[in-house]
Length: 392
Image (cartoon, rainbow, N blue to C red; front, side):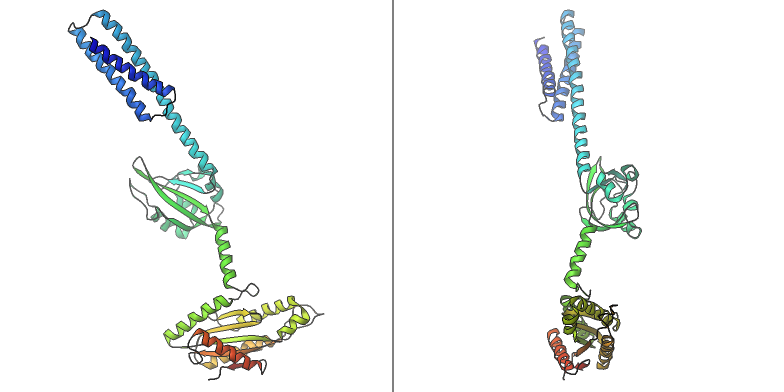
């Protein structure tokens, strides 16, 4: 009998310890509290079985059975109360964690989108609504590629996010990609996707954190343009010109054909700035750039080297005469009057002097060719409104 009472006392101690820990908010794992309560319940059940056996075989009297049975009833009552409190605590923690996740997702500036293992949208935060224009109820249950990806890229995007099956991973999982995006109103944007995956109930879910980088890409493009193009005429600047010239020389060398470099300086331009002002000078430069471009092929390069100096790359010519024809056309175009609608100021008359260097005859590399064209230009400038080849 003393053995039975010891078992009952231990079970009650375990029950009361678990309940006390739960009620006093001591932060133990739900697993630990659950095991404490379960152990107490199992001990009580074992005690009840043993007591029933003793009653059947005369090992305990009715009075003892009555007292012990009352204690056992109290123990089960405490077990039920403790279990209910524990369940309520666990559910409350889950609700708190879910609410915290929702608050964080709502405050995020980036779109947070989760797809289930069928590729359907299961979570869509406020930033996703702001970026793409779809409310949460419109987005949930739909395929992501059908919603935010322009038509030409949908098949490839869907293959990359293929998550069918319990553990399948798409080829883009764990990567950050720049992709074309589509808003609800049909506007195309540039988006950056950080893609990861997580297994929920042994099924693979994909999480996309999406950022609208359209403005950033426009800014980067503007920086690249400023680095390679003249701000006034929009022609390639000296940096891009040297790159194009190097490419043209390499191509001509590889294919064993000739190419030509025309180095051009505007005549009488300084007097335009001195007498008409810099606004008139800028207008002449822009007009000159347009006229030069109109005389060459699309494959040719026209660049502003600096001040009133321009250069033209003819990447492939049949003979020196081809370069001479282009030079004559440019001079004729620039000798025509420039009129900007100011009758009081009148038309502006300028001209041009052009030096021509032929690869590989006049130079075997970029520096030699440029120096040859520059020398020929100064030779032409002595005559005025003319062109000259580099002396052989």
